[in-house]
Length: 94
Image 1: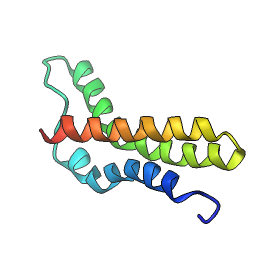
Image 2 (image 1 turned 90 degrees about the horizontal axis):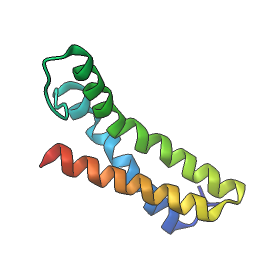
Image 3 (image 1 turned 120 degrees about the vertical axis):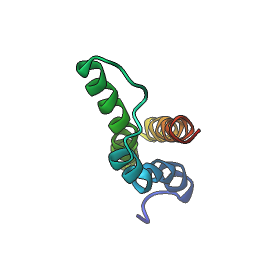
């Protein structure tokens, strides 16, 4: 981890917060909404799971981009991941 600047690790580290909250996503049954259709309920369940899987994947993608020399892309991906994390936390807990 010493090859990455501290500011990038701090920015990308925000996207690891959903992993700590994943028991709420997995076991608390907090979907985005309810529907009478089982297909729509399944899609809502998938969207709920993406709230913690996507930021985790983007964490590793951003660090990999920085390691390969795509610094601007790494910062953009880490920023989008942080925004997704904050938006998901706001939507889930408020």
